[in-house]
Length: 181
Image 1 (cartoon, helix red, strand yellow):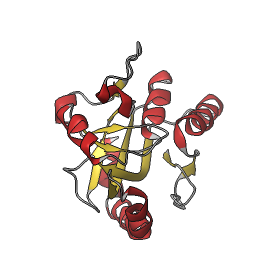
Image 2 (cartoon, rainbow, N blue to C red; image 1 turned 90 degrees about the horizontal axis):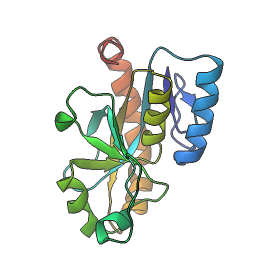
Image 3 (cartoon, rainbow, N blue to C red; image 1 turned 60 degrees about the vertical axis):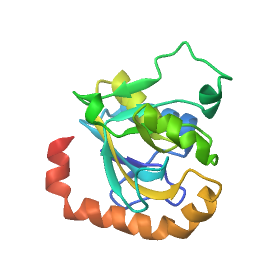
Image 4 (tube, rainbow, N blue to C red; image 1 turned 30 degrees about the vertical axis):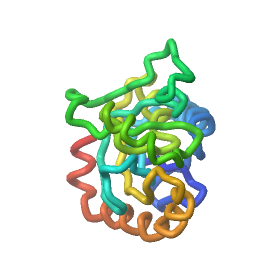
């Protein structure tokens, strides 16, 4: 099953699950309880912490949930906040998920030092639900912006083209992609 957030990030061939960690968790859990899919492939946009370039298309099977306050020593969590369906996480582009978009460019180096290169609001929730239901999962992302003070402006400016690129990429690589997830 292919899923996406909606709210401007929708595809004819994908099921909408909602924006952010909470709505996507609830919707995807309902789907999995009623009719568990054989696999889950999430499609969406992502912001780059600096090394990935605008319009790069990135595959990932690893997600985390780290808030910016962690890097300035203002928070901790007792939870295991990294989830991966990959056999070798060191080769993965880890996607961070939060209900907030990073706009402080100085935080990017902290994420990159932990192997985290992109942020997307839903992917951690998708991976967590997939783990709970033992469903193979992954995601494909297109970079729309850098995580800096221009994040929202650049996201809006690049979003339409990015969604077209992602849809074209999926359509051109259907057979190859579905063999990988």
